[in-house]
Length: 568
Ligand code: SRM
Ligand code: SF4
Image (cartoon, rainbow, N blue to C red):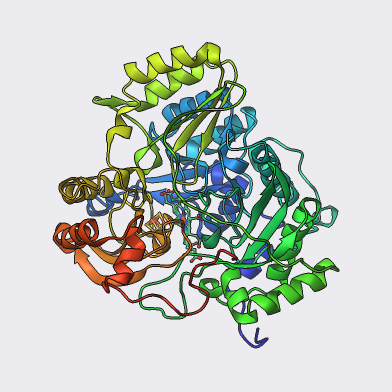
């Protein structure tokens, strides 16, 4: 990195923040405005919140010369996405008392509350902590929520993988007392001399950092889209160790060629006891070599791209003081969720429920939120597990409780959503409007309707039960990981989307731009002939993403690291 280049504005802000305190406490206490200053907006992210405003009412309020309708998004850190029924009930309560009455299950297995006004912010965070959850490092230039495959019935290896996600998350937590001090009445640290951030230092990371732990054959956590991943290598239900992958990421900006989505590279294998150390050292390499001059170029994926995967591994090994072993063989078969009930060898049952857009909400026709609350109320054991596809698993239901849960599922119509097409069950939509300040177009509020339109072609072509991954985001930041979907829509302007085709079914290949700025109303006409062609011409078992390449709708991506990554 050239030394003459000016550091990005966030760098001095972090240094001068007294370990992420800044003026946050004072500004949260000031109720004369619903907002906080630009600097505080940056710092508050490290503590798991974003200032937003309701974009649906922005223009109306501007006309009336009113302040924007400000509120906060709060994101909860919960490694592997697992919470107890009691914690679910608490989040449900908080969503009604302090937020907009909905719970958002994110693409990274976390809860989000939207619409928390400043006056209630500190109290909400405190009550989240009372439920033994927290929002530390859920956002900001640090390691975020560590993801993990949520299927406890897959094998006993799962528990070990989940434990690793917890261990990594804990190890990489910022050490500053700022969070406790600001939100939990923690004791004030008088001098910052007393504090230290042994891993991050005063400037934390150049940018956000994301880790996943995958248990093949499921790639539900989408390892290729993340900075660092650990892929469990399993023999006889035992984890022998992990393949390590680095340098994935989705975000790009329209028209800026030096920003791009990138698939992670598998760089080696390690035994289980080394995983936390490897996570730390990858973070340290990024801390020291990531680009701190340009936030649009500061993610680990650009560091790996610049050094090359081999160069990055060499540097990592220097930091580790030992070498990675050659990567071991592994195979993924999907990045989606498997829906419905499954039973494990102990007789416990696990239910994976489809939650459109991850939004837990009651509607008169579909009282989902109430139904889930009722289930949480009767569960003595078991847990709620958020999946990386914005869905929900109710896990470890004992045989004693199964009939009661089934009755509630029927009463609250919770299984109805499974009667939909496999296309819908494999969909992801990011939040976008009205809360996301970066959205260029609708996503969560639009994708369900678009899928209804596409389902006409799907049904007519006999593809109702054929899974095709379909993902939409309101802008190219890629929060729904659209660039690895077989069909991806990325907001370009209000009502207009770039349409991408040809991603790999298990997230192993980037898709390619098929058509630019397509009005939403024209998408069905654009895709229906391709869907019909696929139904007629596909080879046995051929995936939609593979078909569109073979049939010549798009050219195969050959650049960079973009192709099939399973080691064979
Ligand atoms: Fe994201 C920013 C929502 C997963 C890439 N993301 C945002 C913000 C906070 C907008 C902002 O900065 O003002 C969005 C808040 C919207 C709202 O109202 O809730 C937002 N991101 C989300 C969530 C809630 C989408 C969802 O519908 O589930 C996901 C929360 C995950 C979590 O629990 O931590 C979410 N974001 C992702 C992912 C997917 C992933 O990590 O698996 C990505 C792509 C992977 C990656 O990081 O490359 C992603 N979000 C971004 C980016 C682009 C980063 C980049 O490298 O360029 C931004 C913008 C930024 O950071 O400047 C962003
Ligand atoms: Fe907002 Fe864009 Fe992320 Fe969607 S992809 S939530 S529009 S930042």
